[in-house]
Length: 120
Length: 227
Image 1 (tube, rainbow over the protein chains, first blue to last red):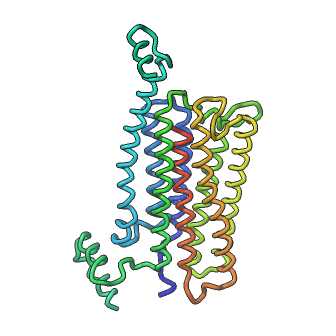
Image 2 (image 1 turned 30 degrees about the vertical axis):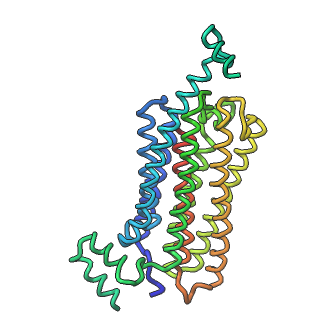
Image 3 (image 1 turned 180 degrees about the horizontal axis):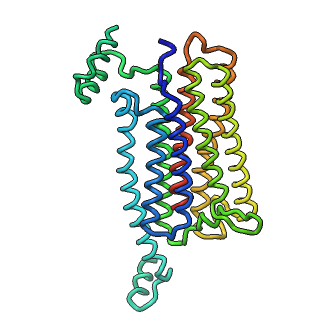
């Protein structure tokens, strides 16, 4: 029993190792592309491929039972909600900052002056 | 014996039913050594921590009205007068990928009860980890002393750059440092023959932690350095 565990032919580790080097090199070279959606897509693609191979092969997730796979890989899905909410929030904060930072600290003009006076 | 029977019945059982069978009827859910299940659950919690950090970084980077410093230039190195973008970070990435490969081999040799090779590969992995931390120390020193980056500001742009950079890479560097210590201790015990009776799952468990550290770097590299 003790000798059992995740045992696989060495070849698969060398193949994945090689692939990880290729994907790392590829993601490094995205840095020479102009900043646009294509570059961002490539960054995400190579990131996902690297992460997938590390989890599936090096961490042996591909050979585990579904009870463990779902228990570990399921919960992080809720993080997408957090990321989505914070993206919306960040966008909103930026718009508000652009709006308020572009206005003078003490409002000028007749109407605004009265309002500032009243606020004091 | 009963578990073997359930195992054998898997072929007829649809995937969904194996999950229900494993999670129900008051028995052990994960058919892996308990240490491995616990390591996975720890790594799950760590996933949440790092995602919170990266999400916080996304939020401040999106919301700042000041231009974000260009990581490609900030982390570039001059090689014989030629400026190569992100050079050090690229080397650090390859260093970690290399260490992940040696770790995977160590797990394999552990299960084959080849103590010497397993321990040697683990020490090698820890060595690559130590090199990584060394390069990170160099990176931080350059950033602080030459570029003038501080957690509260920097000369290149948005002040949130320093805060998120030091927090995220610092926390990751802490994980690498802890991994170097953890791997060295386990490797020493492997070499001494402490696990001859218990079996070599411990090498796989330590390996899970190490691969996770590499995994986190994949995301940091994509979102902080390349984006």
